[in-house]
Length: 113
Image (cartoon, rainbow, N blue to C red; front, side, top):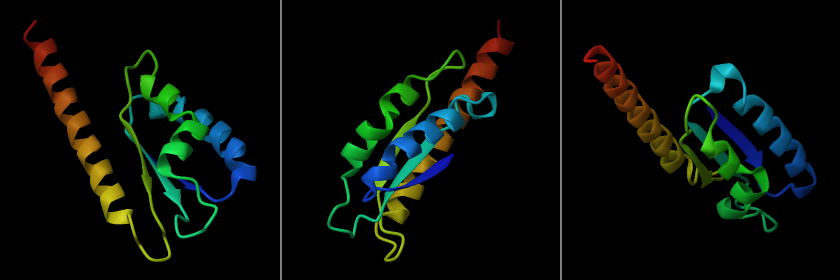
């Protein structure tokens, strides 16, 4: 799952936090890796990825639900210039690979019981 947030718009960050929590806690999103892109890093009032992570409550989402922990990351980016997007998508790819590997291991283990 990819969630893009305007890291320079502090007035709407609470709205973004509520929406992210709502979507991330759905049954369909359980355990799905989450990439948050802290966009508009080129603007002077942009918050860092660390600040965006804290403001959005990503640590709580990372803990997961009964379905297990979720891999999450927040990456800074600027969609206009493309800065940070390659790194962000590479991180998402790595999280997806890790989840697939863990799922495969879990299935193999369950079959061998």
